[in-house]
Amino acid sequence: MKVLPRPKIPEERLLDLMVYVPLGLALTIAEAVPELARKGRSRVEPQVRVARMVGQMAVKQGYRQVARLATTRFGSGRPPWAPASAGPGPGRQAAADGPAPSSTEAPSPASRSAARAPGVGAADLAIPSYDSLSAHQVVQRLEGLSREEVAAVRDYERATRGRRTIISRAEQLLS
Image 1: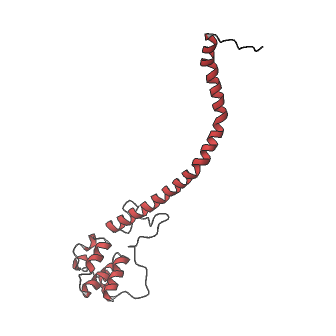
Image 2 (image 1 turned 180 degrees about the vertical axis):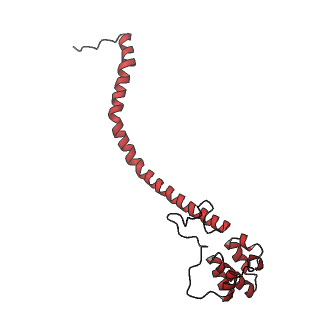
């Protein structure tokens, strides 16, 4: 004959519900947490690594674009937030409109006179407000100038800011 378990009295049921079930649940969770953490880490960690790498690349690229835009717009050869003594930031190359590389050719007579003569300046050029323009804006205006005016802009740029974009385009138009 089979013995049936005796029915629990309400106090035992209440004790199970209020004490033993929470204790059993806490012990089960404590045993399962390390395994659950390992499983979650193995699935998510590679994705987090990739996301971090993409984020770092995006920030670097964004910094380069903002620096290039600020340099072009403000024309100082450095972003406006960089200290005056700072060169290009870490991991960056000099901006495309930085000083022209030194060349083996001697500076033209007009260039030497522009650098020496106090009366020769941007006001003497055929492009109004020359010093306030970005390299891109100057290059656009070069097309409508005579050869002498293009040469004057090129020589002035060599003697002052040395933006390669302007100098290169002027030389293309003069050749």
